[in-house]
Image 1 (cartoon, rainbow, N blue to C red):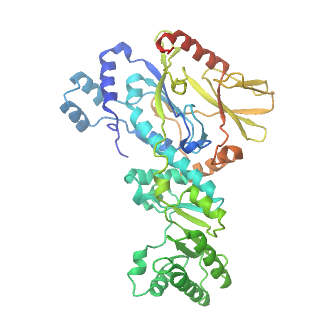
Image 2: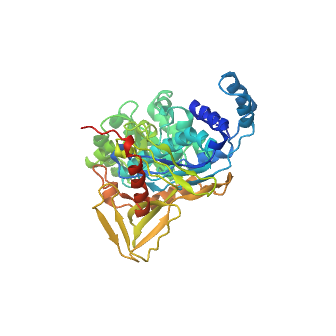
Image 3: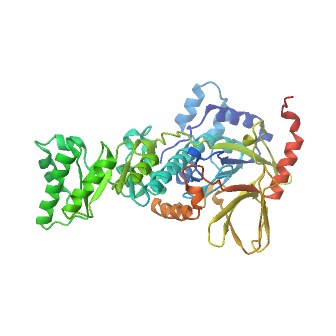
Length: 487
């Protein structure tokens, strides 16, 4: 397990020293991790990265060489460095489980800890959560576009570094990819790995047919042949069919066999390939495609009648090329009063309404109808309780005249935030990636089709409880002198 303690912005450490020098300031606080907009105009996002946050927190400590490095910066005083040498995380963390469908403005993760501890972990937590949520959300779009066909994650060589390749592949598997080409990811997370061969394999043989025969001999149970090295239809397809015939004549019945194309007009070529394979009786052959695919190109190919049934997606998935950042933030929401133990709400105000934070120590409830479909998410103060047998009035926190009254007994409520750390001890067992993938599939099934469409999806309501809404507006009224008005 790597020690990522210094994976932090310098100002986190300079603020920590400031808190240390002002002992009364190091109170217990609440920080929320949330994001403001779904990437790519999507109707939802997928939560991922919690397991790596847990590993990071468990291993949070300053090594002797870390202290020595900080000392050489000539910024930090010796008493603060001595404190860091004994540093451990002792707070609480609550989070939404991985694989969950999530929406803007709701806390994905909540930290309750002494402010020095809570401040230090901001950078790494955001780094981990932002990356994996982004890639999982992108992968979910691509898997949806494939409409039940298998999607394989093929992006490691185009990822922004080894960690992005490993954990991006992990996030893609959570969101529904059937396999990854990344062998290290497969080993680390016990997920299926998949791959065929490169054009160089074909080119290293005297001719294409010899290369295909050699590959089929080595891997008779998983014989996917790349047919576009020289001429897709007049050479690659012909030679692949020859090899498949020879395997059939020899009594070899592969578990998986077929072809892959990595160039050309994939819609036209796939239809020609399918017709030729069907004529030879290879009706169950896999027709796989790669070559800079994304959800839009996959949908386009399907609309053109492409007969592809397996998709290898690389660059556009592992980098989320058309939306390269998730935008999660980490904001102070409350400070605990030393005498009473109550959490005093804090709010960040902006002229941009979207950037005004929700104050207080909060939790989230997912509200579903009797069939299990999502109606709304409700952000409430942590000490609020609700009875699903009683009527529940939901209202838009901005356009408050927009209201929905749910009759008692017509809905269910599930608290989304679950305890991860208590007093610095991990109390949560992360599921396997395969288990998270299954949970994610169930979560996606609870979304309405209108929320899953790619163009102008319905945005699921994320409402505030009446108590939280009132508290927020009281604080806005209290601090309104700080908002500049034009006119």
